[in-house]
Amino acid sequence: MSSDGSSTPSAAIEFVDVVALIGSFPALAGVTMRIERGEIVLLRGPNGAGKTTLLRLCAGLLPVERGTARVLELDLTIDRDSVRRRVGLIGHTNGSYPDLTVTENVRFWGRTIGATDDEVASAMARMKIDGRLADVPVSRLSAGQRRRTALASLIARRAQLWLLDEPHAGLDAEGRDELDAVLRAAAAAGATIVVASHELERAGSLATRQIEVVAGQTREVGGGS
Amino acid sequence: MNVSSTFRVARLIAAKDLRVEWRSRVVTNQVLPFAVLVMVLFAFALDSDAVLERVAPGLVWLATIFSVLFLVARTYAVETADGALDALRSAGVDPMGIFLGKTAALAAQLLVLEALLVSAAVILYRADPTPSGTVLLVTTALVATVGLASVGTLYGGLAAGVKGRETLLPLLLLPVVAPVLIGATRATESAFRTNGIAVSEGWPWLGLLAVFAAIFSVVGAVAFGSLIDE
Image (cartoon, rainbow over all chains, first blue to last red; front, top):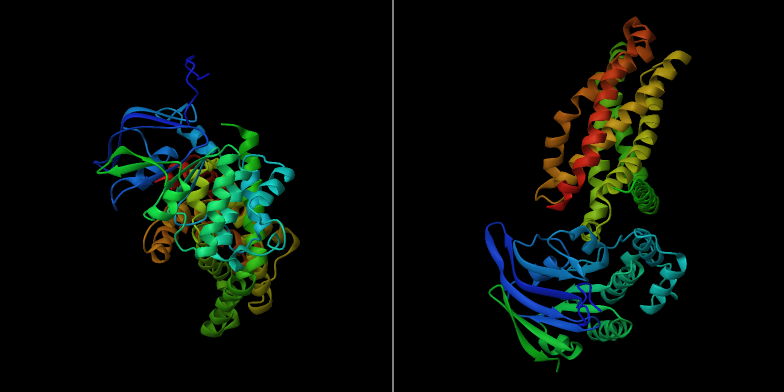
């Protein structure tokens, strides 16, 4: 049951006519969309259409100028700090500390919300970085391994909604396959994943649904391929 | 605001910063040798025992402040190398905890640096603090360090997301730390009994250092969140 008492299952993201400004420019101009929990949704669209802005808005990094916006049942217009703590955003960087080992990085991010050592170990096991990679400094990892470390950090800090901006960028074919596998596994385990990508073939095959972002507005495209 | 959560985050951030430094050894292999080198070059340039004895306190704190620029730049280079500061922000990690943690780690590194520089002053410039002068010197170092670490963390955060931050940071920081340079130098002159100044004359300067430390600790803790948010 949703927080408002209706029988509709609560959505991970529910936007109605949302406007967000960057400076005085309406980067999002009336977005209406609903993303259910456990979905993998691809945001597609040309450069400058507003995909990254939409992810940042969902992460609580931008204020909602107008409209109704709820993320994980929290009102984005009044409770952005709480949203931030439950959402994980990975952009073009991984948010890791290259001099620290994989374990130290994941443990650090887990400890920011008080995660236990067991949770950290479990997160690393899910991303398959708990074996020989565990004590390797992140600076010595491949791009794919770094991305998996970042995702393990999201799990360790119990992020329920994963917002990934061009997650396949910089990865080789093997790294992309690995990433897709861990994202599917994460969604199966209950995470909701929103991916912004230009790589329609790759990200489209991963997604259960696609939303097109054009000129700051969204429209449903259909299921993943 | 949850105080226990703030201090938990502060401890976490401080431990992480010190661990990163322990692994990378940038401070020990680059910043500390730089500071000593500055002291040695001053000795070469002034080339007079009498002059060196007279200016030793000022040189210790000048070398400290030059080195602070490297330490602050380094602490934020670690955060921006792979977008970790953005990640901390987007993860909703308590900004006051981040500020306090980074300040504590910076202060720990500064204390090591100051101990090294005072030792260099004793060896190179023949500074000779008495036991009561040593108490004044240690107190001065502790209070000045809190001020330098707070203002460094605050201004480093301000410059972290800006283009040309390497050159902007000295421009922002050096004028602001002038009161620390003045207060700490005067107090250290008393501790070293430079020109026959009594140790007791140095204690009032601690008031200036304490006010500076208090202002920037409070302002930094309160303002750091908005500073790194945009």
